Image (cartoon, rainbow, N blue to C red):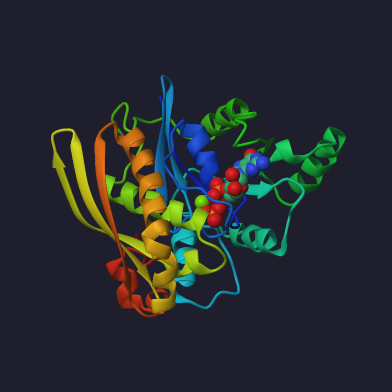
Length: 295
Ligand SMILES: Nc1nc2c(ncn2[C@@H]2O[C@H](COP(=O)(O)OP(=O)(O)OP(=O)(O)O)[C@@H](O)[C@H]2O)c(=O)[nH]1
Ligand SMILES: [Mg+2]
């Protein structure tokens, strides 16, 4: 048996969480078109007859943001680059930016082997451009391997998996058979609600909100949950609730549907919206919301 811990790192929006979900075959980490969606380190476990891989999805490493939340997200991601067996450096095909370059610099100090995963290759219409792009990216450092994939189309993931298994040590599994996620159901609820908010609210608002589960009760086949959406200003609360509560209702319905599918149980979900001024720059609030970066 082989078993190892493999961190998925890169700048925001390159498809790290999509890749984790595709690799383990289940929605473990939330995904949106907006950068800085992931805020925590999130584990997903891949089980095979010949071994187990514990993937760690991370917040996108980013710069030029002054809030304590951004510092905590970067700290959380950077903390996952050490004491692991392998790091997957995920980039987006055809879009290597200054932020990718900064991640590459950070990886110089990483003592684990680093494999380069070039994601979103489905977006390349002229396939003859792919090979030179891979050669150019692959020459940037001594990568353990360079693999082009598409997380959303599940392209080439088996080759990636084979490379990963080559780079993790022999050892017993970390998790019992069948366990794919390491977090609890309340975390899944908070993240699912935040995913719907991030996908449905415009501009900067998703960066000013967080979700906290207040109450969780299981009775037979029914989970009754209430959660608070924290925003930073009264004007934001108005937008989250929407006219006659329409927006909040839409968010709640979308989240409930996903959760019922995920849990295989009935879900009763009550959402509230509340203001906590400047929570994203307030260390005490970040600790309360489990966002202090050392989670
Ligand atoms: N076309 C295409 N889009 C992709 C692919 N992988 C991810 N995406 C899209 O890219 C966007 C970002 O995906 P995420 O998985 O949330 O990216 P991330 O790197 O986890 O982003 P952060 O959590 O913000 O750091 C979403 O709109 C995805 O649907 C892919 O292989 N092809
Ligand atoms: Mg993510």
